[in-house]
Image (cartoon, rainbow, N blue to C red; front, top):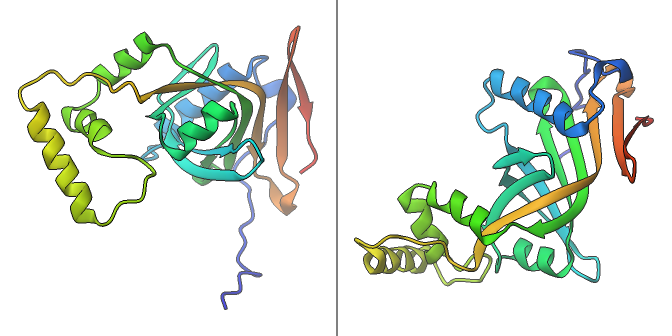
Length: 212
């Protein structure tokens, strides 16, 4: 049995006040993302993505954010994967960015929609050739017999596509998370953390402080 009762850290690096953040959470997110990039984190765009089935059974995994725009947050995946199937059936998601070295988190909730085929094509065409082949080769989230079977699927796909332009599979593309809630969390001493949450309304965004 592993006991972690005494495994804790005091957070002292920074604070977060209402008069220090922007009126728009997307702009505030971009500020924090740029700071995480400048800090040299290896994958600051790694985000934990939670989805759920229609009957409320959740699943969670880490994916990579590939774009932030005025509409929201974009990532790409196989639409036939577990997350893809769950999002198509139940188009809502929760996302967390954990920049622990900066004692920061960003939590996002929102409705999810598929990107247009044109936007998915644009990103797919910019991927390395091996990543394009992988999108064709892997039956993502399905049970396979062995690593050898996966390697053989890769080799067969590579040989099949050799010398040909690799177009995007129709079962692969992007999702956009349109945020309805964006919360910024800054660690503080005594577990009295700063939590500022933006809520989407018909008029725009409202900002509220949450108890830690």
